[in-house]
Image 1 (cartoon, rainbow over the protein chains, first blue to last red):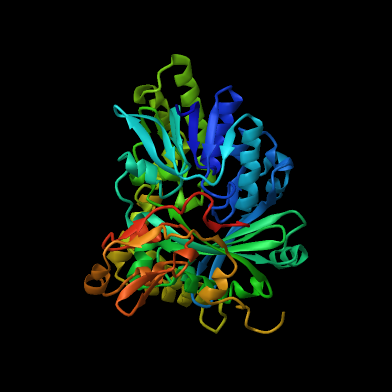
Image 2: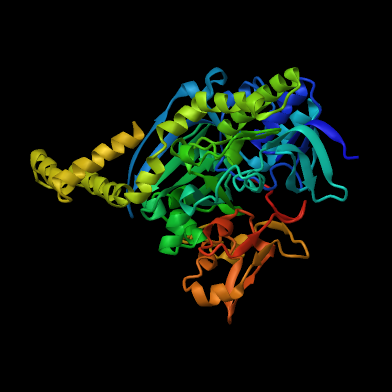
Length: 431
Length: 100
């Protein structure tokens, strides 16, 4: 007879661990199953973890968690081939514990720490185990079958936090096949660089960090972004673009990464750094329209598996943790009623959609698709803005009014109506 | 380190050498029907978009170097003919990220 748990959580990333932690803390018997050698072995992200959603679970977690640097500055670059328009925000508020906003983290270390905290709450974690399928009886998920001998385990609720590919949600028919336009293929490297050198190059105090997001030429104008984040004594540099655009222009992702590393804006910052790891991952970018069915009888889908990522604001791990928290709340409620059916667990879906997760994804629901079908924003306007800035700031005897007129005409060369339409469309999908 | 050239590890071989893999004996990736690649897929996008360069067209077939797979799932979604059978490697096997 297979062993029975209250909850089985598939996956030991931010969503699964958040859910497992809170279920165990409230007395439920939780089994968490991870396919990697350890939690984090299969997990990749650029590296920004927002504070709020984890602090709700573990107050003042940064005092013991393996964080790299609290971020005090966020820079944004709109890049052309040899230039960039730069803007951003730096503030001391983000340097104070009481008002930290986010941190860089390295996932292998961080995920192990977080899963360890869940174990302290009573979660049973087994690594190196693949869940091959959900066990379904009369339309209700009753457990899972793993790749271990006699690998069947039962539970009242199975939480699918099995990541972007979520083969298990697919098995249940919760989502259709993911389209190449709905995922960003991202490659990244960890570059070793001494802490003092990072501080000097990025103008940082000890123990403070900076993030740079890059648009435009960083992806050669294709839909995507590049990023450069500061860790304690390393940098994470990465670039991602929709799989559809990579297929279309026949890019090799690692060659695009090399292109970014050699860009004149980037090169001086990473000069002399030593590559320590190379990683690839898919980021769910389908947004609101790509959210699968989230709840069924005896089953909940959370985190990347539920495609809960806000690509415009690089938020994902925080949404994963929050969805894990909502999943735990729903399961605890179901435990009180003794019924684990879809209508009881549906409170999870409601909470996800009513919270900032659902609202933010809804706000940008058409942004990715609009940028994909209208490549002019990244491909034409960003280089144009760069030319305009150079023109305006270059002193060459022409009057400022003449320069302004020249720039205006440059933007209108595409046709006045078209330009106005482009601006309106951009406002509409971002508003 | 001095000089203009910062790219000490620019090739895919050098990059892959930075990654720890614990390869299984069997492949978790399978081309379902090689003749589709040969006859109906002139571009063979898997041979360039795969970040681990797992897929190589050699002679008349796609060779699958599953040992260097990052398990990202791009080929599962990006193969224009849905011609790749994609599973996770057995528990504990496959890529083992050690940093990020």
